Length: 129
Image 1 (spheres, one colour):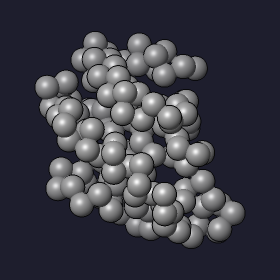
Image 2: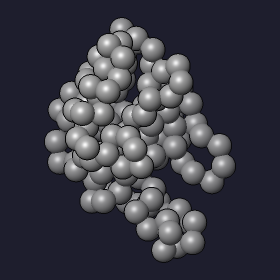
Image 3: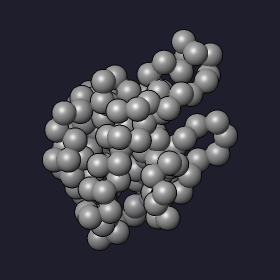
Image 4: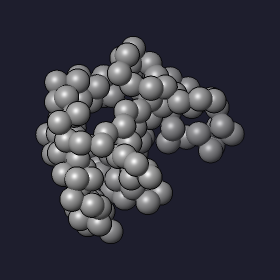
């Protein structure tokens, strides 16, 4: 499945959110590989997951795998051993393109090594890009 197909499977409002997120991500991470991974769109830098979004019951959740270290108050950090952070959208006018662009820039340099998490038996190491 392609990301555009994933987006088209959403309601009209969710599809608009997904399309806007995809456009901004593709613009600011042109070097990233994108694909459907574990059922939702994800962008990778050198095989390391960076950003993705997924349909939840009542919103579209945009997640940054290493976002907990972005020091951004609008991103909600995950729990447990992972370093993720996310934001939830229910309407396109909630998407702040300037914030999203800044987070995407941070995602290029602030990364944890999710690519090798299985090989390292669950241990995450910080990558220095």
